[in-house]
Length: 84
Image (cartoon, rainbow, N blue to C red; front, side, top):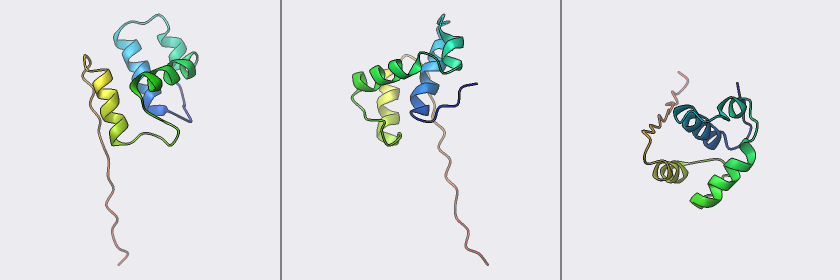
């Protein structure tokens, strides 16, 4: 399984789209091969900078780019409880 240290959101989207589309490179993408160039091209086409990670604006841009796919983002917020 791939463990991306950077641009993991873009990696995950590309891998899943490849899986859905039966892309012949799917298994190579899972092993983190051939991804860096594809992620960089995707970010340039969408017009986003992933140097500092991805936030809500980047998520929206990805969703617009892949509008023919059902992409759901689950955000997890942890509430901090005061020490009692």
